[in-house]
Image (tube, rainbow over all chains, first blue to last red; front, side, top):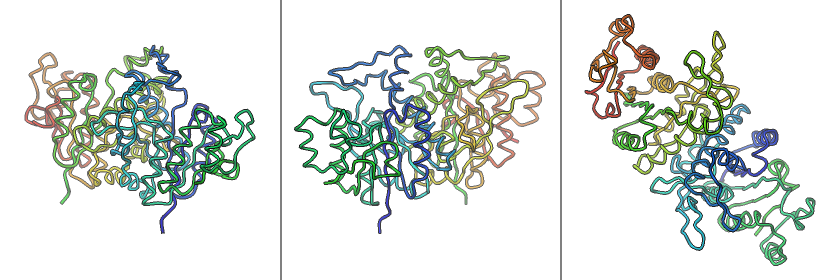
Length: 258
Length: 258
């Protein structure tokens, strides 16, 4: 029988606030069984870029990763945030290993093609090296991924953290029963974005389509949900979205079902 | 029979100059057998700290690692430099894995005690996790270490890169025939620090003592050589010091012998 593997993505304000991060990691440390953590970078990269005098370029409200942004993203995501999380987990007696996609060729991507917009150094994931990742897991070590991937030619690329988590969950579904948890600042997917307590308990594809038609789904949630349905169709067993407590109390969150 | 493991430390100007780094990594990629790379950070941390408005504190000509310096060191050493080296090695078809001492509890240290000088967040190595490191090596993956260690309590600490390399070599001597290579901007240990070509071919402890008495050994070389003799006395088989070519042509370098 396959073992269960939990893949937890944490992002946004949970990463930026030291106390919230500590509380989250403490919950994460108590999760039983095999687990992987994927983290975003919150606003730290933007703050450091601005201190270094690098302008953050936006086109149509979307961030462009130019050479300087990439440098800052590597420093903050794969450096500061990743290593601090690993050290905090060690302190919580969780033996962990910080990774970006270049490490062990764990996440190979392709630079996004330039169509209407040139997003710069941004990668779309092609292959997740599930053999390498499972070899780490089987040693009792918890992989902690920053959202950076690498091309076959050795180019580091900024990568959507939600996609990193979903692609890892999909790739590892062959070896494990994978469960995917998205932790962010909301209690789940909201039926009404103005009402924090309008959490949808169970969201299937039809309901998702209805919400899309009503324009009830906010911008940040769209790619997250697309990732979720893609993951469910590719072997991932369970998916939950919610705040930091989603990993310990699924009940207060949104479960995504087919 | 034990396999041979080469531990290569690269630092100083070899890290700062993109072309020199590329040439070095290309040589490193051609080294046969098991290998580990340890890198310093050159002046990049100082430059980034200054851009971020952090003052680099010095006491008696020695750098003090305060909280801001540590932050910058984690960003640049474990982030930017480490991940760029890993990505470049992947491009050279060397499957590598970037690590700091917190990752896999690979290098556990103790914060340096405050005596006359408080060096701040600086660690002295206590334990190298040779089981974890050899498990990576035996998968055909090359560990790439940044010079950062971690206490048992999960505190990241700035650590001397030469010591990191020496301690790894010592700890892995039980499992492998270890060879230690220090690559820097000189051709080796110089008999006369004003003459770049006065490289000493073979340096033993007695000669070292004579050079010390003559005050012929420069400041940066002192801890490096102390590390070398300590390593030889603790199982390391061969030690060479030289420029980037030391890993491919031992002949043009200094060999340290008992």
